[in-house]
Length: 209
Length: 140
Image (cartoon, rainbow over all chains, first blue to last red; front, top):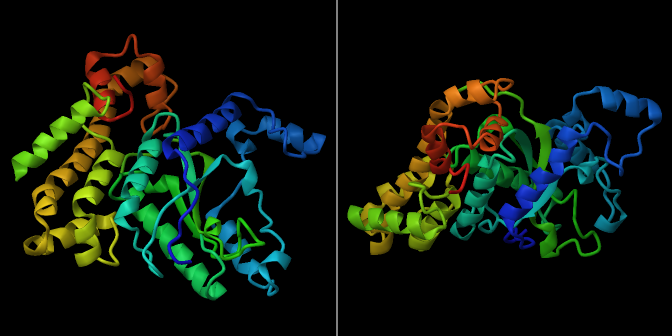
């Protein structure tokens, strides 16, 4: 929970890749191979507008699942994973450094934030909506981690939508605390302190604000 | 002071691989703010965030205490971000005619418009083309 760092990646490239990964969905109505649809649901999928092939993930649903997950009181390794198919979404993990026990984004991460904004303004991604998900490690209480991660993901979304002018209608923020650890065997490991960004499908036409 | 900032902006505009763009990316501007004012922000604006002008307002309020590098540059760095944002807003107007002509299926506000205009880049107007470059939507 200390400084919320994570895996280094070429953000811009990664986000663009995420967008590219989403493009075939637009062009190809078949469901992704990894999804186990029954033939019936496959037909329904095929008849829906193409981007609906992306699993429907709302901020509310994810927040509800994370809250419900807090009932599993055993050690992190014994808790079941969050029952939501986030893995099927185009996504990236972002390295953003926060001040200790605070939602303040450290200046060292400003450039990263700007890069995320640039990518979201890139033509490849301009038509999409995103879910910004904050995660902590397992240091501290679960309630505190839940609150802190929500404040941190809110801070990221606020900077993107005000300073960097990403349309707020394209962004949703969810803190899941320590309920979705990346490394459950090492619950305090730095890899767990991460911000995830998921491409959650087409934004549609947004009226001028 | 102002001149130093503008000179920096000009230098960046020509150094960043965007030879013809008159604006710089959000990442470049944000990186410059951290570079020139990172220490000042941790000292005078601890707990505040970039969003909603909080850092900007804090730097303005603490103008007398800032390091020379931050004092000399933070306003012009902010102008870089604002210039990019303005260019992005302007691009939609500058390209509206081209959108209607070359992207007839798309309505204003559709995120796919820029991709469509890029695909039609051989025929879109010079005004729209340069607006897209300044908005950072296309590299030239």
